Amino acid sequence: MRLDQWLWAVRVYKSRTLATEAIKGGLVKVDGERSKPAHEPKPGETITARVGIMTRTVRFLAAPKSRVSAKMVVDFAEDLTPPEEREKRREPNLLPPGFRPKGAGRPTKRERRALEDLE
Image 1: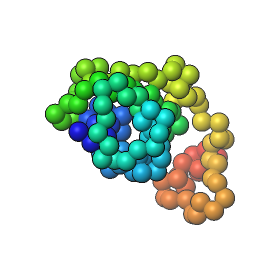
Image 2: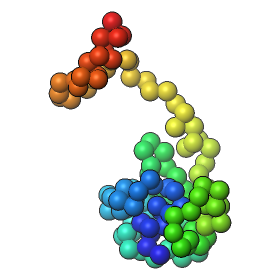
Image 3: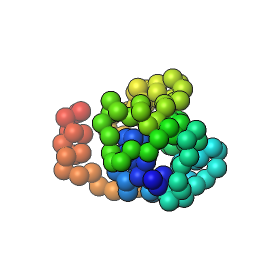
Image 4: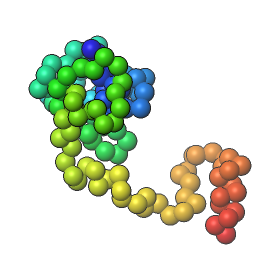
């Protein structure tokens, strides 16, 4: 099974397209080395994937026939992600409410209404 298929099947990425783009972009490493989407992982290989602000680390155990439920992921991947990485997801956004980066363009109708509610 291809690496991009496996990352999607064990629910590291929400879609196979996202997995492929992450691999091509260098966000996924197999045993510390960049890889290609068509790489065939072998049992025991450690795969590090950057997902949003968190870096997930998983060990390849086996390849499922297709996408598996969250409960069955443990049969195909061992999660080695350190607890510090999981805490990154829980950190609050430190930007003040209503902050728009320079050059972001005009706010959409929804964003404008949210800004008006803050006032």
